[in-house]
Image 1 (cartoon, rainbow, N blue to C red):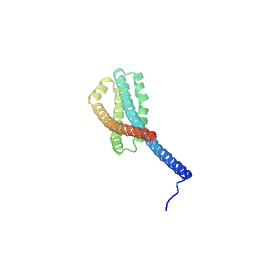
Image 2: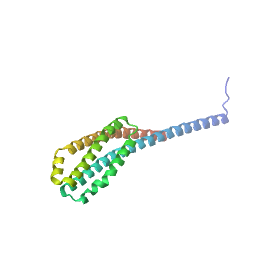
Image 3: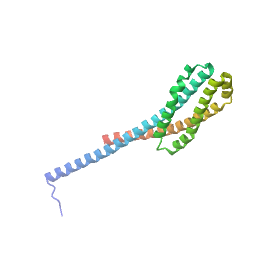
Image 4: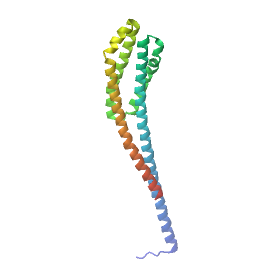
Length: 190
């Protein structure tokens, strides 16, 4: 059986092929663009986690700074950074916890980090109380025991591990975003 290829049929076939090609390009472009947007979201998410980890460490350092000034001078005005940073420590920890809910390794580290932070904050309160009630010499002796330093080193190490993990994720996610961007460009140009 032979198909008679009239001009109208040829035109209809050409039109159908063109519509099919536009449809395939449109669907591919849409999927590539969605993948690009998702990768970009994860890159931003990872950078947000890293920022919050830095904020958490900064808040803990502010607590230490306030305590140190108070221990040295006995002047309550030096406790201002401590007072301001205390609520930020818990708030920022909770933000990091929420942002890393999808990452089991980070959640395990946070489970280890939380008691260390609680221990550090309790140590800071204890030193402040000793300074208020027993004076500089007693506070100095307590600080010289090194408990706070050891705890802070553990906190720094855990936060550094978390940041390193996020940095690795950032590298992988950035590479995926770049590949997705190239695929999107190729699809659109095709």
